[in-house]
Length: 297
Length: 297
Image 1 (cartoon, each protein chain N blue to C red):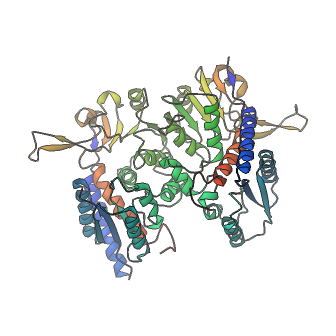
Image 2 (cartoon, rainbow over the protein chains, first blue to last red; image 1 turned 90 degrees about the vertical axis):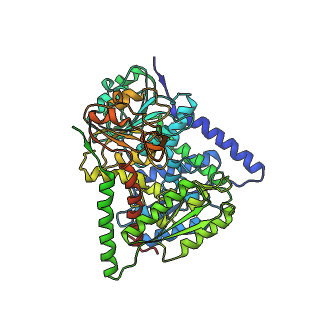
Image 3 (cartoon, chains in turn orange, blue; image 1 turned 90 degrees about the horizontal axis):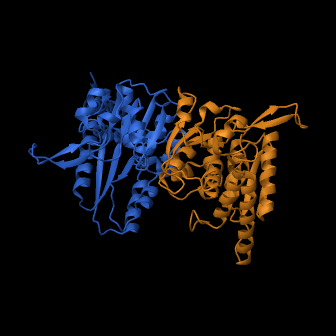
């Protein structure tokens, strides 16, 4: 019988832990962590994400500020805004909700954020530090997955692990983190992608599969070894006649047929998703405590 | 019959190309590329490496400067020296020969080098840019291996590749570069290391093996598939009664028994080694032309 990895419950536990830590911090004269989010334009999904981040901040006792900018803003104006927040000693973490309007160079904006406030972990300095094995902000989804593995005491050392998808924010960092010489690393990782010809065979040998390619119900039972751990990062919204809302969320894993073969599996929704925001909160707390970039304010 | 990948000949060809480019650059009123190397103390191997880099610079028409510092130098003094070179507009590239004396934090020194002068590609910004797929300086050994694959037109796309060894300067960047969505990437890469239990089986399935673990003659014939491409990054100096000098260089591959199974294989010496210096020259040329960090001087 497989065990469900409950990301929702785990994220609630961690939020409670963070809230408790904030109370203690403030009691000891420390500052309340403050996350700022820049939201450009009125994209529906972006609005939802930012609102959810605000709610989570409030839940753990952080201050959150949303800076709303019209999508007519120029790149220069946006960079100035980022720079202003960089200099604001009260703001610990800054995220810029992506995607940005097409006339703005996203990478330029990401690189304008001070690495010590880059709680999304997208800045090249933070990516580089992660690869080298130095303290830095790790991007939210890989950090959330590592936390789930830790909390469920799933051994990675010596295991064979397949990561499907080579995105900059999930697949690549995940493959590196699981390979590192750390307690929840030390796995032999194979990074698969659209050019992997024998994906089925590769997956079928894996002890741990991280599915992060963004194709609904891609991973089927024949691709999974008996007893494997399956982590589903995908979230695709599809139409459904069975739900009130008229749509439902699907992961990259065909859950019903894959789950019975697994030792552990994450559901969608309620698996990796809720852990992503928790990682962002954790990074903001670390930024506020200056635990990663010491002595920098 | 296997084909030998001749790194020595290839490096000579590329040095000629670089030398020709320097002549053209100067003809067109451009500046002569200038590489500075800081050498702390009197370690024999470090002296040899730096001397060899100087010779290579001179061969392609670069200016090279070696800054020799006693190993009694303090970290602060060394950082000041780095900062001085950072500000010198005449110097395009700066390398600090490692290892440094134990009282100096190597990572701190590496991070003090301006990313746009970090032609070794060790700065977190350059590592991060490489992972994200942005232009940046790629560390010399992985860049040299990619260049060999290109020059010998060895297809990587869709191939299964095993990298043995997870060092920051070879194994990790190599695994990322071969996975990238590029012409000489698109491989399905498995990164193996000391905690990989079934290394023999993993290697025996690979189309391409990059051996970078630093154990003399580790890779044996039973670990290699018929027709595989084998790239040997290891260099271990061992005693020998058969040579005049009393020692010889061994790679990570047991060449005599592995070579007959290969389609392509690099020898040691004369394989990857000579390509490493060529990559450093190439990075210095790019730094001088400001092709990677545009508009920054």
